Image 1 (cartoon, rainbow, N blue to C red):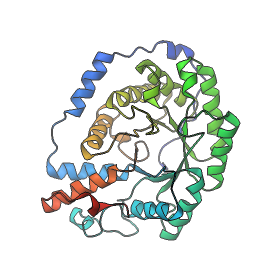
Image 2: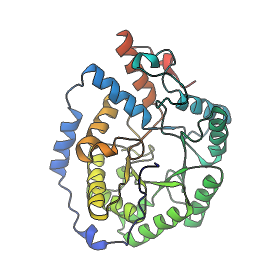
Image 3: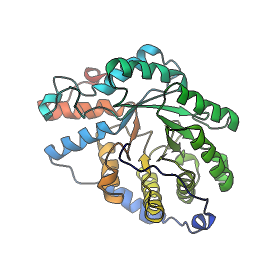
Length: 325
């Protein structure tokens, strides 16, 4: 995110929140249109798939994570496409190759594994180290504990922190308290970038999604993120439209660009391309980089790679041919 002026936040503006009124019919209509976008021509489709790969936060958040599977994930992040396949698209793996994922995302206890592996591979300055924190996924632990978790992850080497907001504060309209909590989380991040997970599927209404997006940005979030991936409803295009409108309005009013990260439910190439088209249509080309757009995903990369293989060979591979291992 070297070329992006970071969002410092602003004073909480409750009047701004009170003017929010989402049109569900219009949002559903736009989401349907984006999902039904015309099929891209092959050469353009390949370019969009490669773009999607460079915007992935390659993630493992399993209870049985170990140093070995985290290290394998790091290897995959540095070389996300099979080495014999990549030259077909005009690239080869060397120190200047731009084809790599944006970040590797893990629990705080595994951050050190990521840092050490990326340093060994020579990619520590090229791939971000992201960590979830603040009582992920529910965010129901005491604030002091949540802040300590952020500090721990940063001390271990995390350059990005994906925090979860306290959904209770949204559902009960406690916007000042939500604002103060996120501000403290921003401070705890020090130089690390702050991604605020809204858990949109648990916020009740699209108006709440919009308001939570604005409050998170006012408190200084560098990204706003749809979901933890653990909710019953995760990243939908409807949520993406609402959050993109909030990002655009914040940029127009405050002058700062905030990133968008869909997470949970983006599992295949069609989903990924729909999100990229949404971003291009609603926010513009400036947001079509890993500085301002990310996918929070674990399984998406495999399908993207399978689609590239199909483009080259005209045959779709079996799933195990492109595993993380």
